[in-house]
Length: 596
Image (cartoon, rainbow, N blue to C red):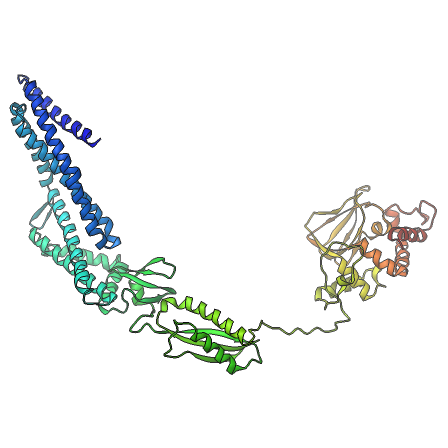
C-alpha cells in the first residue's frame, strides 16, 4: 500500500514538472525509450528509499522511544514523544527530497528540463526564504523574522529537553549511586534543571544577538503586571523556591495541610502534587504551604503517636482493662516497642469509664489501617477477659403509672381491642387536653377517665384543609367529630342555608351517628382544621360495658327537640313519625344499633 502511494507521489511530481516544462517551451520533445529507462531508475531509487524509510529510519525511531521514554517522567513523555515524532517526520521529508533531486540529476529524459526544474526549485526556495527572512518586528538593534523565531523556539525547546535530560542523568547516575534520600534527589534535580535551562536560554539569546539590556522595559512592565495581576503566580513561584531551598517538606514526606492527608509526589515551582491514601492526586499551590499550618509527619523522624479511645462499663476492674489494652497493642507488629504503649484513664462518662490507648508507629501513612486493626484486637481482648463495652444508658422516671393510660395514637378501628392494646402509659399533655375537651361535651360528661382513655385510644386525628368537605347528604354516619382546631360550617342543602358554625371544643355529627341515619346535611372546613374522630366501634364497646351510659345519652339527645325537628326525625308534637315519643324511639334505635 505504501509502495503504491510512493509511486503515485513520484509520478505525480514528475508529470507536474514535465507539463510545466512543456508549457514553458512547446518545442521540447520526449524520448520514450529514455523515459522508460529513467522510470526503472526511479523505481529502484524509490524501492531503496522505502527500505531506508520503513526499516532503518523507523526502526531507529522506535529504538529511541524505547530507550528514552522509560527514563523520562510521565508529565514529560507527551512532549518528548511529540518532539521525537516531529524529528522523525522532518527526516523522512528530507530523505524523499534528496531522492527527488538525485532522480532529476541522474535522469537523461529530464536533461532538457533540468535547467527549468532547478530554476523552479530555486525560485520556490527563494520565495520560502523571503517569507521566513521578512522582518516582523524590531527588538533594539535586531530585526526579528519568522525564520529567526522558529529557530529560536526550536533551540529553546532543545535547551529545555537537554537540561532536563542532564538533570535526570545526574540523578540516576550520581545521586542514586550515592544513596541520597528521595526528597533531596528531587530537590537537587529540580535546581540543576532550572539552572541549566536559565543559563542555556541566556547563552542562546546572547548568541542570537539579542541584547538583554533591551528587555529592561519589558521586564519593568512584567514587574508591574506581577505586582497587580499575577500576585498568586508570583507568590506560588517564590513559595516554590523557598520550599526547594529550605526543604520543610520533601518528595516522599507524609503531610497534612488543610485536612488533606497524603504523600508528596512532586514539588515544582508553582505547585506541589500530593497523593492521598485513596490514590487521588491533588495539586496544591505552593503558597498554601507557606501561609497555612502544615503537619509533616515525616519531618526529621517519621515516628508518631496514635490515640485510641475506649469505653468500658462501670464496675470494671481498671487494672484488668489496662492490661487488656496493652495486650491488644503488643499483638500488632506495626506498633513500636519503644517508646512503649501506654494507657490513660481519661475520666468518667455518662455510662462508661473512659480510657485511651496510646501507641507509637513509624509509618504515619498507615495510621488508619493500624487504628482499625487495634480496634479489632481490643474488642477481642475485652471479650476474652469478660469486660463489657456498655450501651448508652438513660434513667426514665414514670409517675402515676396505674392512674394514667397511654396517649393518643392513630389506628384503624378494631372491634374488640385486646388487653395488649390497652397497656397504660404516662399520658402526654396532648392526651390530657383531649380528655378534658371530651369531658366538656354533653354526651360524655358522665364518662370516667378510663372510658375517655378508651375512646381516645381507639380514635384518631384528621386534618382538613380550608373548603374541604367532611361529609355530604347520604354519606354513612359511622363517626362523631370533635373540633380540636379551626372551624366548620353545617349547611342544609334542602333549605339552601347555613345551619350552624362550630368551633374548637364543639361536637357535630353525633345525632345521625347515634341513630344510624344517613347524613342529612353538608359539613365543610371554613379554615384549616383538625378533628378528633370517634368511631361507632369504640362507642359499641363503651355502651356494652355501661348500658346506663347509653340510656343517659338517649335522654340527652331527646332533649334537643329543635335539632331533631330540623333533621326531620320528629314532628311538631315532639313525637316521631311512628307516633312514639323521642326518648323511647332513640333508646330503641341505640339498642339495636349497638347491640346493647
